[in-house]
Length: 211
Image (cartoon, rainbow, N blue to C red):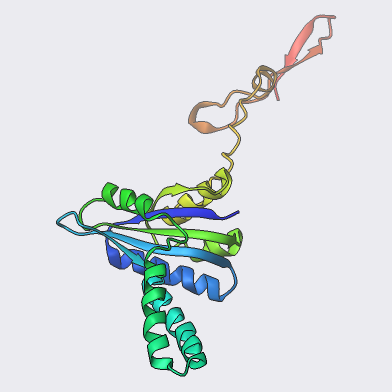
């Protein structure tokens, strides 16, 4: 099952740089992309989709190859290539693979003027190593189909914030027994003198002995 990630950027240069980073991740076998598209919105509000692969051109190229092979069978390769290119371009223009174009245009319409977004459809995502590489891209997550924990980690990495840490335990308050046992400080911060010990006097009465 593929996962979708849509990240918004303040300008198109940042979005294209993010796409280049995903391409680099794929070369390192950390991700496997099914589709990747940069969506831009001009200052006039015009939305444009920048596909990584032009399906019409790819269809025309494939049609030319097959048309040439078919034309060789009928001893007219040039005619076969021309017919094949036209059929391939038509089939390519009617083919919409990967992320739905209507959805991408809706994303583009939600962007601010001059903004951009990167939409990536992933077959494979090696989370730990890929997230480290995405930390310097910036951007803001608009939508993902990732598990919640991975989405939160992705948001944290893009924003540059560190992972949440466990708060330190609260300081331990002294107990009443320890407060009673400890002598009160004297003036000037010096420790107070220990209490006088009672010793029996010569007449049987108690008398105190100063330390």
